[in-house]
Amino acid sequence: MDHDDVLRDGEVAVPPPAAADAGLEFIGTIHSPWTSRTETPRQGSADGPTFRIEVFEPWVAAVEGMEVLERLEVLYWLHLSRRDLVRQRPGNDEGELRGTFALRSPLRPNPIGTSIVTLDRIDGANIFVRGLDCLDGTPLLDLKPAWGR
Image 1 (spheres, rainbow, N blue to C red):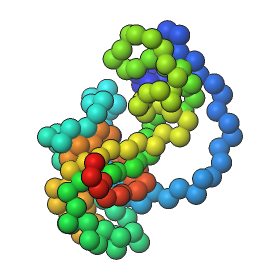
Image 2 (cartoon, rainbow, N blue to C red; image 1 turned 135 degrees about the vertical axis):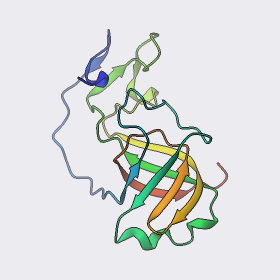
Image 3 (cartoon, helix red, strand yellow; image 1 turned 180 degrees about the vertical axis):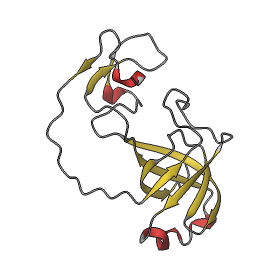
């Protein structure tokens, strides 16, 4: 059983509504050194390991021009996260319960992750970055320039 499947004392889960298609398209996948949520850090670090973001066809042409960027905003789908918590405790915090929207927890109704990362290099459909904190095989939603952040 994964540690995210167990409710901590006082946490509250609700039955999720029926799934509805928001029209999201996974445009790639993120290749990470981590395969378990227990080993993944809570936040990425600019001096952390290199991740390879693989962009799928037909989206590879959209990578053109990114080589001049220093930083990117990466949006990704936290596909293994539970989606039913409305109140939870932060992972390493035995303090007060908080509403899900008051936390950066991956356990959310729509588990969209976002990170500002440092661009190392681009090789065709592969973008190499530092600063992510997600699992190997995480679906990629979008990439954006991180101007002035």
